[in-house]
Amino acid sequence: MPAAMGSRVRAASYVVLDEAARRRRQRKALEALELDNFHDDPHANLVMHKKAPKFDESLDGKTRPDRKRKARSFEYFKQRFRKTFSSLLEEEQQLEPDPPNYTSAAARPSARPERHLCAVCGFPSTYTCVQCGTRYCSARCLHTHQDTRCLKWTS
Amino acid sequence: MTASGTLVLDNGASLLKAGLASHKDPLVMPNAIMKAKSERRRPFIGNQIDECRDASGLFYILGFQKGYLVNWDVQKTVWDHVFGKDCLGLNLSRLNVVVTEPFFNFRSVQEAMSEMMFEEYDVAGLLRANAGDLCVAAEPARPDNLCCLLVDAGYSFTHVVPYIQGKKRREAIRRIDVGGKVLTNHLKEIISYRQLHVMDETYVMNQLKEDCCFVSQDWRRDMKQAALPPADNPILRHYVLPDFTSLRRGYMKPRDSAAAPAAEGEQLIRLTNERFSVPELLFHPSDVGIQQMGIPEAIVEAVSACPPETWPHLYRNIRLVGGSSRFPGFRDRVYAEVRALAPDELPVKVTQPEDSVTCAWRAGAKLAGESRFSSRLVTRAQWEEHGFNICLDTFDV
Image (cartoon, rainbow over all chains, first blue to last red):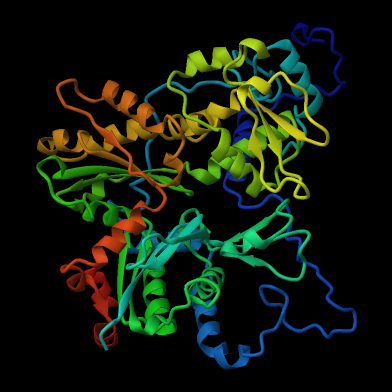
């Protein structure tokens, strides 16, 4: 067993994530920062009354009586303008390919070096987990990391 | 078909600020539809959330994604509530409307906004502008504000925008993809890992962030102090979480009770370095892996992209607006860092309005009362004759 692991005995399969896997995990973490919600819609599968017939679900599960009348103008908007952000961005990039545009306005990487923070306690860190590349600051934080997060949910 | 008034609508991704220009203050409410676990019969639209008894695990449905309006269903629902009898009770067909958009708003979204306003709400006149443009245009012209460098720290991102003689310089605009949303999500993640699973509690964590976080003036020193034992630690605080039965809103316990144990039934969150490492992301996005420069560096870059004769004017008129600029210590930190990075001979001055959140709304309301306002509008007659093209010519978005 490599000496770096101290007295902790690990499983026979000693996995070390390579650069590509680490980048994938980082990207997943960044995407998680952009989410609006981390849980599912609590109203998703509501059964109002078991005998009620199921019509097309609208936003809040109810059908509005004046829907048919306004249906044309509002449905028209819904059809035309329901797009995801990435498709809108692609469209915009084709319309405005030259700077200045949305893409050129993005700030570039900093000239200053990155600061490394311990993933467990948040204080400045100097060490890196050999297997997954997460930063830690002390042996205690390393043990917490190995017990809880190291290589869990590997992609 | 002359209008009888003007509605100013600062349409933000997190908060919506709306009101007639003649009103003193706008109505401020979340620009979202929220669903609660406990109240299954109805969703809460905008300020209806105040009626919700149990705001734990609130599910947010936002019309905005990454700062741009993509979901019109949601936005129209919120707007109908705001314009309806529960809130403002307005009939837009007699009003001019000033509505804000993000910088570099997509053409298709601009079209949709114009169509929604003229066709669906039947407004008498429309002015679409960036929130920052309104803030700058409302300032009276003085010799020391020929140019302005606006930093708009919002929910989805932060823009650094140089204005030269009232007009924004598009090629010098810089966007940092860190805003209130990233800060709150990061706070949720670190607390969930270290103490208590709060990933679902956006509403409560947002209040925690606003109550407890501050911007550090010296990161190294504060990190050292946050690691000290409780008796000597000036940064340690406990936050009492709401339980929605006896306590509806959380609060931060004062410093001297840091050592005291929790009272009956109180759920406490222990905050040390989280208090300042979360807002630190605005200055060092690389702390969390976002490979972009922070606000001070972006300010210097934005200024450097403008003609050299404007640099003194830009550095001495830096204005901070937007909800995420309300952290205590934000202004001082921006000043200190920009002073260190900017050329020594140029004066640096950083100001913040009294209320960063409603600043753009107040600017819009002031503008609506001025004589030059009508020349900047697109009236319904012009829309019917020329369509979207007149918007392209009139608005500088």
